[in-house]
Length: 177
Image 1 (cartoon, one colour):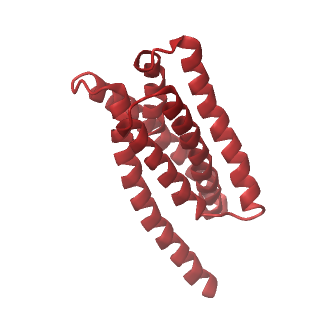
Image 2 (cartoon, helix red, strand yellow; image 1 turned 120 degrees about the horizontal axis):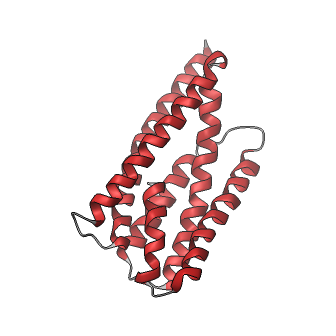
């Protein structure tokens, strides 16, 4: 989903008729928004992990993608929604990475993180292919590809919340033993 969103942003040069510099600023805004919310997620978590931030961030991204795909693209709409999507992303990724580190066994942590990175690369590649498929064979307008991102994000959010509840429940049972 993240790769697809990144591939869509340069297309706004044509969609919004804003030029290369302003399009680059949109991409920069996304990066700065992710950085700001990553730091905020770290501060909110303190010395612990706040898994409840994960569905909050994932849902925020999904809603922003729906709006980016459904609303008439204007500079104001796109700028605000890109910033909000970036802010949501930090609240998603930071606690998710922290949880992955905490739940992986000490002696296998490197393997777990390496596997997570390999899967991330595979899905990034899949996102690129899916973007190409939406744009070329399907001839979908670039901003409408955000709706595909939203669909994937909603499915991922639902599966993630379900799995997170399972893990939390398992951890509670393990702590009681």
